[in-house]
Length: 175
Image (cartoon, rainbow, N blue to C red; front, side, top):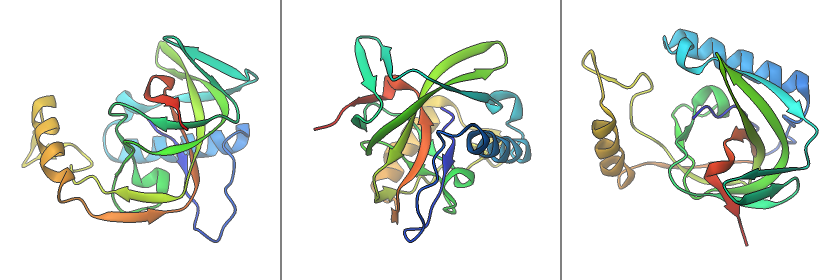
């Protein structure tokens, strides 16, 4: 899952991705990082802001301004996205829906939510960024097993509010 984010320090105001220029700049930075990691073909995407105030996905309706939390296993937030040195797990995090985007990657398209994540303690993800071990790709089973093992030992870091895009299937209303 591609999560484009705009990191902020705790003392800085959160800059909104609900601005096409900011969204384009973050996508360019992420695409440059994916090129460096030789993942460009898998990850390159373009985002266009939508004027929708609601987004429905499989019976769940999200609204701009709604407080949400992640559900399932939405993946990680990348260093290029947060400014933190390691990937951070996004499981169980809460935030507020700010707007919606339409995303294109190759011939596929999808609608994403821009969420301003609440300041929180995040768990680092210790799986290598390039998903390689001694020159071989991890299988999905290897990644799942390694992820479970490392979750118990993961370092925790405090991250201030920032915005990122996320697929609506990973969001539910938060109390």
